[in-house]
Length: 349
Image 1 (cartoon, rainbow, N blue to C red):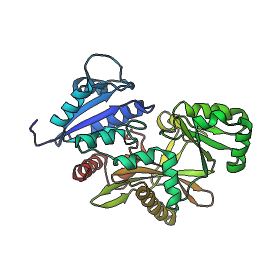
Image 2: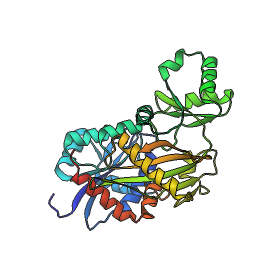
Image 3: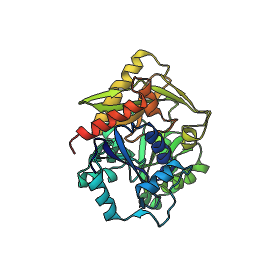
Image 4: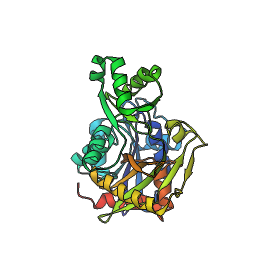
């Protein structure tokens, strides 16, 4: 396919529980990409992993659907996917959140095909998605974070539940949070206030992963900063604050609750803003980040900063902090996308 434009495969949907968020993010990205610079080829992936050709994928993208139908027609078989990408595509843009998209799997696929892609490399994607590995890297690099304990499903089956609960409360106190180790958008997360909802919280997290993270509760403000790596320089946005009406910033608060407030820039003093930038870069480097990420922080009542987590393919919806923070930092949406694409094309993989 000869063209002066860059041919981009915009891949969305996917097998994770964040399927719907991916569609919302992709619609926003598609509408903001400069069509005079790029030929855009949407490729939808159903929840069962079926890939669809661009004509059908564009139809889904332009519709009101928030889920890719798992129909048999117009799908691409594995070898057809590879053939199409290698013959037609200059750059892959996987707008896939959570497992199978943000965890290194799709990144490894593109690296095997020698196709440049937007987003962090395989290893940094993988360790950022796995909260156990991420937290261990944070600990190694002396990055402040919450207390935590890792629990695998096989371990939980043989544990004495009462003794384990008492062990956790002694170590973490009450309340504490239970969450899947490999999931984003606060899916599967539960706040445990007392023993009676402990088992339900554990089982809910295990529905999404075979490994879970249990963290102590910290009374704090939720602050976020966006990162992009350009010309071997890591640029950090101004910080923003999320003020949710819910008990914590869960999936509903992120994508469905109009009462959630995004305060940009965050109303914090300059000293803390500088600390956020330094910690954001330190956390990004700790996981080997090389493209983009959103770094989430807790700011305690004592003005102590804790790094909560890293998202290597953050949301790009109308409510998403990543593009909003950069917009207020002098990078409007279209320019930000241009920079992300340029970085991906110039990176060695």
